[in-house]
Image (cartoon, rainbow, N blue to C red):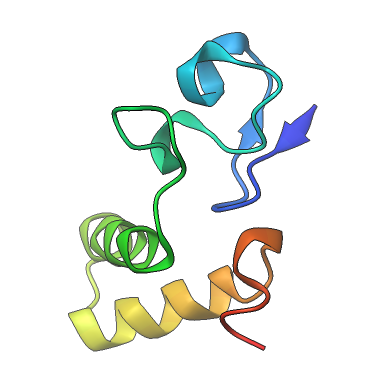
Length: 81
């Protein structure tokens, strides 16, 4: 099993991978419609919105949580060092 390099989601089934391609290192939630990986800012925004929706925190707190999570992921290590 692989974990997404951009959000950490476990990717077990082919449908979890971007474009159903098990060679991709990122998941369907981190892919743009054309199959490329979202940018740092796109991922930060979508993760922040997901945290607001699922945890009910304000946007500042959600962004702080998102950045803390992203700091631990391979795709963003250079942006958040």
